[in-house]
Length: 214
Image 1: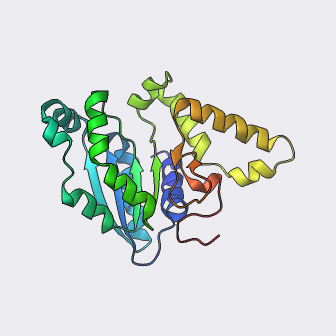
Image 2: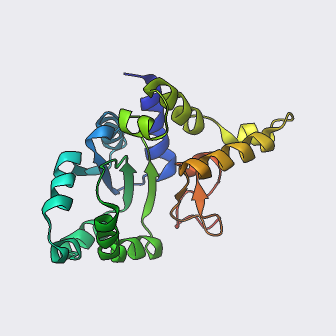
């Protein structure tokens, strides 16, 4: 296994959500992210915490959007919110199914209460793309190029780069501009006044959860 995958899992578990004693950690992923999902699961267990899986299959997701009625698309089942409420941390990895934008819009409105709850709750969460052929093709890169791009953005010490005497802040600015253009900036749970991070809060911000008073 690429050692960068293990390093990324450590970042997600130990810093991005900062697992704590007794935490239940939901790992939400599709099969394109299965390699990272497995290592994150292992890391959570090694830290003595309680991992749970929420796994999707692109083929099954496509069936849902092809066959579900408007009522089914627009319905949020109580269990869909309960499983988040029962967790302390959420790590989301790669969701790449190619489905109808119109139907996806209906579904997003249906699950909006989950998003609203995440923003108001004390859950510590982060989102992560894992290099796969689907995402590489979307960004018009080879898989190797996309792996280097993703790991080059996540598995680095950004504070060290920022403090470097030779243009560290300019490098950061260029990276963020490119990331916004590529759609790689995600909301970061719990960083008041600093709503975005490049995949994970470790690299750009000090606080790592809503529970961190700093």
